[in-house]
Length: 253
Image (cartoon, rainbow, N blue to C red; front, side, top):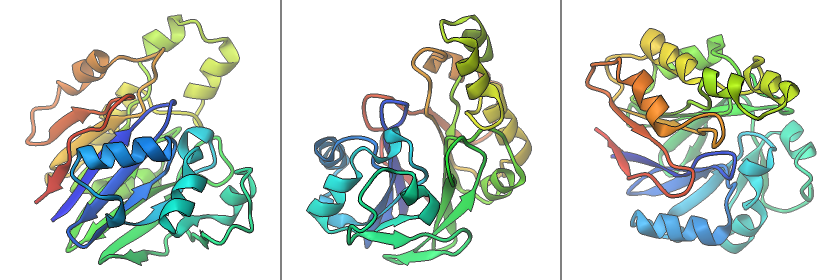
């Protein structure tokens, strides 16, 4: 049975787990090795269960813990060449494995596929993990709902989806104008309303769990997200991920 969890989700660090009884993977490592270990243990997952790490893009809140995690566990780290070139990490480290768009990687009887998206990074990707016909999408740090995002979200049985900001809080908040424009300008982040529109227009009847993540600390609040998603009355279990602690371990039936 495919399982997944958010270990941390936000500009203070991002890390996500997907796996089953035969092994698991992490997507991004933007928190410390110690916190990754503790949060996996909280979920009942031993570090030895992790078989690989996948990197979505080079921003620090997604790569801060990569080097220590890879060295301590001897993990392969899948990353695109352009992301590695912009990550300010040793390009000759032995753990790097070249990640290719739309070319699935087989890990512990799971298929992990990276697909491109809009975000202000060198070569940003999101991921769909499939096992025994079930798919989990890890779709955060997206500036807009492009065809790639819509198509892959539609195929998911569960997903972690960005719901970064409330438009009114951003507009009336303390951020300078250039930063507001960066966030909402098409290569930044999705608003609560944009995330809901993606769910409403492209979600399918098989979507069991929807975890909303990467909430801004300044420009959003879990209650704002819940207010937007309370419009839906389907069978989807909607959960808001924390910036400070792991979610529960969700199971995809």
